[in-house]
Length: 106
Image 1 (tube, rainbow, N blue to C red):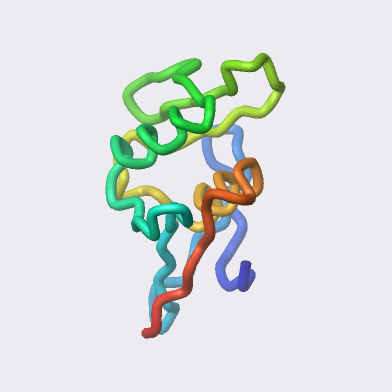
Image 2 (tube, one colour):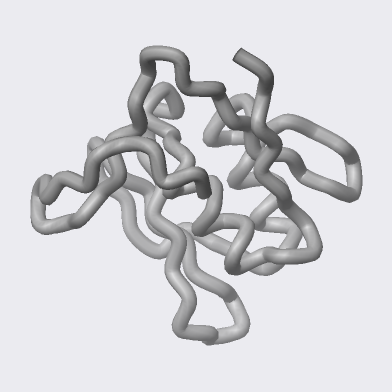
């Protein structure tokens, strides 16, 4: 992560607010199919194939956990427009061989 932005505490969670002016955008790519994740449904479908299933959901957040009983948990915004680098890197960290984050040019 480039670290550009400001850390804020919101709803009991520390989040990195990315700077928009002049900052490049990022995309999450499912490596085996070279598919850009453009929706929550597409991302959930790929994660389900890797053993993730819904654990909890409300109006704002969808949480996924591994079917095999692991302690890992991924929290994603239901509104994909709120999908940020912190979410992308969380997915990559917990699925290293299947996802990558790609920086797009400004």
